[in-house]
Image (cartoon, rainbow, N blue to C red):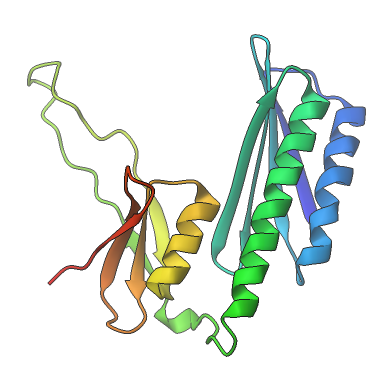
Length: 182
């Protein structure tokens, strides 16, 4: 397991780096295979922020916590990531006999940037970020699991039964919605 620690807006500290590596190396017992974990430790005024991101078999796991102390922020994010990984592994055990990822079916889907005429009114919103991501074939249940792991409001995926691009999203009432194009 490779743990990359990056410091933002703070001096690099070997003690903090070793503490983060020690805490996050405990999640290896839940996972098999090589794992590349990215940790960003930052300070914004009095907030100490720890962010962790890594990929498990095509599922992104992210965690972000803040505290008054960097060690406390690392503890919080490590326990959050540990719970997410345990939940992910538990759900995989429930889906006995589920097929693995077929790499040939994974495609890269670019999100196009809309061209905006800069001579228009300043109040016109514009798209300032472009994201490319892999659309993995999965069931709607797996997409909801990915949505929860990423702490996002929506997730785009390829339905494994229909081979069409779908979107699952979190509703205000706590339930989920599914958008299926015709």
